[in-house]
Structure formats: C-alpha cells, structure tokens
Length: 315
Ligand SMILES: [Zn+2]
Ligand SMILES: [Zn+2]
Image (tube, rainbow, N blue to C red; front, side, top):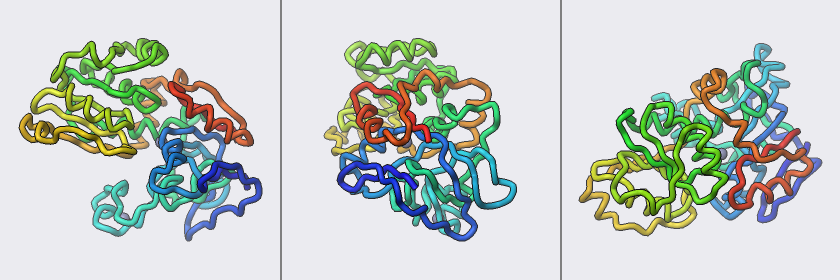
C-alpha cells in the first residue's frame, strides 16, 4: 500500500505491507484525510515520532464485523487497552497504555489502509460529506473545551491562536451564547471569523485581565503567557496547545490570582457528528486546498505555510 512516512525525512512509500490487524479489528480503506498541525509538529521532532503520519480521516470498512462492512466511518485516535482504571471509568482517552493513530506507537491514516478496533469507529451518516467527516476528530477536540469548564452566556471568552483548530473552537464556543472574540494576526483569519459572527482582534486591543475564559490554541509557548495576561483573576485558561518549548511565565500569578489551568485533549465524536449533521458548524470554509494522495509530500509542505488552513488528501 501507499503511505506517507516520516522517519527523519518525509517520503511517500508505495509498497508497504498493510499494518497487521489485531483480533477483531476492522480494516479500513481511507477515502480522505486532513493535515493537522500535529502532523507538522511531528515532522519538527515532537515525540521523536517515526512512522506513518495522519489521524484525521474518513474511511470505508472493507473487512471486519458484517454490520460494519461497506460503512463510511471516522475513528477515535486513541487505541486503548479496555481494562485499566481509566478505561474502566469510561475515560479511554487517558488509557494508561494507549497508543494514538499516527502520533504514538500506532500507524497513521495517511495510508491506503488502517486497521482499527470496532469500538474506535463511528458511522458517518449520508448527510455528512467526506470533506466534513474529515473534521470530526478536530471538531470533537474543540468540543472537549466545553467538557472541561462551564461556560456561561455572560462570560467573555477569548480564543488565542485562531488557526485550523482555533476556528473550530471559536465556532463551538459561539454556540454557548458567550461573548467570544478571537485573537488573530492575519486578515484571512479575521474574515473567516466574521462569517460566524466572532469579532477578530489583536492582542494589544484587549485590556489586561479582561477575560473569564481564555483558550490557548496557539501551539506556542508565548500563547500561554498571552493567556495569563488576558485572563481575569479566578478565571480559567484552557490549553488546547501542545508546546514545543516550555512557556516562560510567572507561575506565582497563577497562584496569587487563583487562575484555573485546564488541559484539554480528545473529545466526543458522536456530538461532533451531530453538530455537522445539523449544519451548526461550518468546516467547508476552512478548506484551503486538496491534493491527490500521491502528492502528499507537496501537500504537507503547502500546509506548513504560515496562515494555511486545512489541506485535504484524496485517496
Ligand atoms: Zn489533529
Ligand atoms: Zn486502558
């Protein structure tokens, strides 16, 4: 099969064996996949990754349980043990021996085929296009912000770092009725946010300590410092970023101003599918371009350009 591999260098393999299925796994044939910032960060050395990249995808089940065969599916990215304390409590995303599709010790979805346990799969209804379905994983991650904190319609919420994921976070938070603004650096981001009624501002336009909730989606160490500057005393900072550097901030402020800092990772796929089905989230506007999978290396480099939104790979 074809697969996009990173092993210090990025290259398209054309005759790799199909990854081995575990007992009971379904075999998926990938239809379309999306390039995420995490893929680009892995290429920059995060987690010392080596292997097949990719974790945002829609696929067709070609082998496995009879009721799944031929179905279009998306897949949760944590492949878990099913019996540790977290799995037992229904928190598989924190499984003690989890592996993660295309990120940690599990092959990625930038490949013709991917085996996955049936419990990872969610069937995609006919009302959702392949392009939309590719956004289910990041949309679920955006929804996870609202699992970690209570957001009231009275709250002022600032999203810092409105890129691919930040755009989804902003739309999700807008649905809560809160007063949401996005901190942007480019005209393109401001135009996109305007479509959903989210004002775009520059950091310097906002008063210090003015936000009840700040969501940091920058992926930059500076993002946490900016969030700390923006958040009110007793406010909340939600981290949607994984940082390549260590944030340099005065942690005493976190203690003295009684700031809550909440990490946020994978979210509910079923809710993400429902929001897309009901057209409550616009993902099509986030697609900047698409490439046939054979041109995946070029696609990755294009997607890494500053200000790029989502690039899709067609199989
Ligand atoms: Zn991602
Ligand atoms: Zn587990």
